[in-house]
Image 1 (tube, one colour):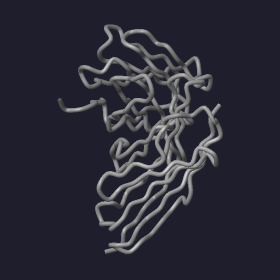
Image 2 (spheres, one colour; image 1 turned 180 degrees about the vertical axis):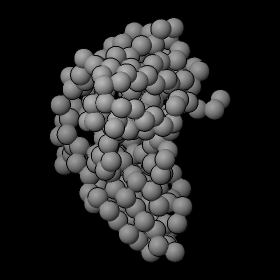
Image 3 (tube, each protein chain N blue to C red; image 1 turned 90 degrees about the vertical axis):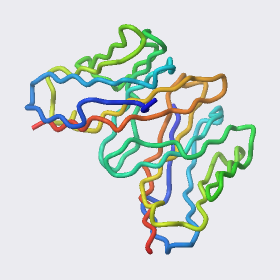
Image 4 (spheres, rainbow over the protein chains, first blue to last red; image 1 turned 45 degrees about the vertical axis):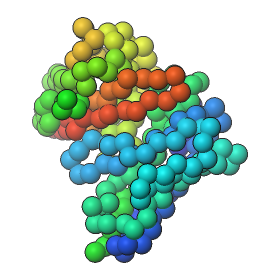
Length: 113
Length: 115
């Protein structure tokens, strides 16, 4: 099955700086890569996603890049704000694994005011 | 539409007892998923429904776990003879599905503590 690795596990940045979270996946057939934000006591919330036919996608301060050859994808948050503090999860889905999403282990982001 | 709703939010039980959780998905969503999340880990797939049919079940899922979605709307997840290792957050998600990808919408989860 698919294996998704995520780094770093914790990340602290000053308010206004950028944050980058990286994930790698093992199944070259994976074709959909969402990112989720999870705040304390809440379920994960989809913040951005990318499909394998696209190399980059941007939504305001959030962007995701995908390198299919290297099998890695990254989340970029610019101009970070304290409300960006949360745990972020990457995920991958491959047709070969049916409808299962495989999640990374999460990155705890702290934005220091 | 208020999103995916899960009840109860918290459940404390003694080892050996049975527990049941409920999930109400977003009304027009035909796909429903159950995931389990332990501290410091990402969600782990348990099972998946399309309408009322349970189409996939994790090989890691013990026979003590059973899920239903009787009318293709709400779903229940039952754990029989609970063990301390069952302590986790149980998340429900729903989606419309799609040919290439799908957007999962998660509920706030049910936190289970087995004493």
